[in-house]
Image (cartoon, rainbow, N blue to C red; front, side, top):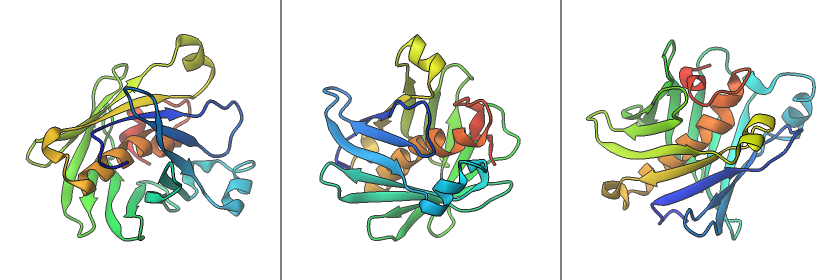
Length: 207
């Protein structure tokens, strides 16, 4: 799955939910190549019916079609700035995200496991829904673009679809691909949920 350079991420359409699931597909054929599924644990899932999920911990597992774990995202309890850890299939930390406070248009930073700044995620204007992952030197690692699934679905459900494109200079860097995919999933599945009313762009501004 991770040998690819383009990914289509499509949210499952549901009207009542306590967890999120996304299909990961080939953008040309829409063949299923993997899935991202939120697995917060039974206690947290039960509490979500009575307590807002915004500040509670959650875990997202990304698996291929053979159900082999590729990497995970985890957010713990927090009050102001969420830290989302990205770990490989063996549970080793690859890096983590920290949301930036008081930003317009949304942004968060990506760090390595050694706490070095690896990249910044920057968004465009509110209605463009485009996000770019850049190194501190300004080189683009890849981008995430929202694909609309139809006016009716966009109005009456929270279902989203995203095209993730990896810069050809990073096609052999597995960690960079994982962090880019993780950023796309975290933006919608975790950061967006932290704000009432949704809003794909400004929700990156942090918890």
